[in-house]
Image (cartoon, rainbow, N blue to C red; front, top):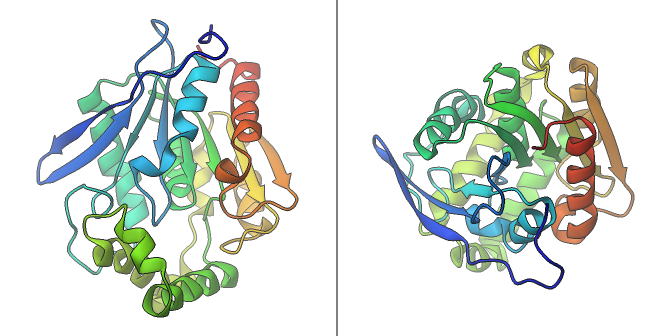
Length: 269
């Protein structure tokens, strides 16, 4: 069941979650049908909850499912972080923060959709065996450090310091330096070169949808192959002429992939 064609989406609910020392902003759509699976969106390394809109509204309308997104600490209007971030910050987010968010919000049945860093968090959370997580879509995930990723972060750092990236990010983040440097410093740390979570994913048993743009400046097919070789139930989409954010470049196409896959695997309710 979906909303009627041409029907305007309801304005998303917005607010803050208090998780101990952290205060995280969130946005979510109004449920359109009782008992529907919640779609939880996990943003990229320079993103926020707001960055998922209007894609999130379209996904909620097309699927009939409630959609929930939050800004991790250090991003958007969420609590600031202490820098530098620990090098295992993605693993900590998946193991500690995300489960707490699901508990506080009251989400007991969900699909995770993650982009970039958010896709890594989604993959690690899916590997945890949390029964609330019934599947995950990974858009441009990172599961092993590779040269393309480090080079992409280095280019972004130059654009932040010398170009207009800082100005553009400042419209979305309360602490723009914390958001950017927390991300870039962690990826450019020399100790990052040995980072690899592929073996962790061997415990994933839920369906995974993998999406990779072939023109992604932050990663290559190595990332998708790493997930595919570790997990038993996956569907892979390599997208010619798409970059690091296919959901922004082709939102309707990505929505269709997500809904079709999770309907086929009987994950969507």
